[in-house]
Image: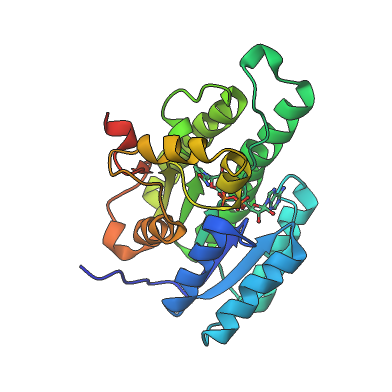
Length: 253
Ligand SMILES: NC(=O)c1ccc[n+]([C@@H]2O[C@H](COP(=O)([O-])OP(=O)(O)OC[C@H]3O[C@@H](n4cnc5c(N)ncnc54)[C@H](O)[C@@H]3O)[C@@H](O)[C@H]2O)c1
């Protein structure tokens, strides 16, 4: 099976680091023009630099996905730079809470829901009309294994990722006849800054994280990127409304 792409332009949010950066690099390596969107200017420009070094084409757009006007501008800049949008990977997300549900704060709730749910919703809201006008395309949203089951001491995060799957499945049905596919990817623990922030302080936690996965290790960013590219590619033409666990077997237990 080869992954072929009928479109030419991909947009990745949260592309300054981690899973988003790896996926932006993977799209560029397939010859797609990539719009790299993030709050983090230095990191976003770093991703564009890596793509250019590898001979690819990319553009950085600073965007806070919680701000409607900035999301609208992101889509407008995509169209003015590259003339179209074929694939969107709505991946920007945050995780800040550490306590049980009753210990959470309203600020944490609003921050996590703001980026992880409102951000994904706003991005899809302004991407779908572009894909509709062009006659098709594909969207992948980053959920998590925390969108498929419980995440103790991360209940707000779990709720936000369940919501991402709800948005994904509903949009997939609404646009199924319009040649627009909408899927989600559900990583388990992946080696990124987000993971390191959570586990660096205590090496036993890193061992525990590895042991949560039947394959005996945490995942690599490239392993999520390849799943996202598959879901966008023509190889997945019959796959929509799916939440794909990429988790080393964690949810099979
Ligand atoms: N790392 C993991 O173990 C793991 C597991 C499951 C799901 N995820 C999800 O994967 C996605 C990517 O996470 P990562 O691990 O690469 O994290 P990361 O922290 O390395 O990268 C996240 C990126 O999103 C950006 N971002 C944050 N808020 C933003 C906003 N309001 N607007 C625009 N950009 C914003 C950050 O600047 C950062 O560059 C997130 O949605 C996360 O919830 C991560």
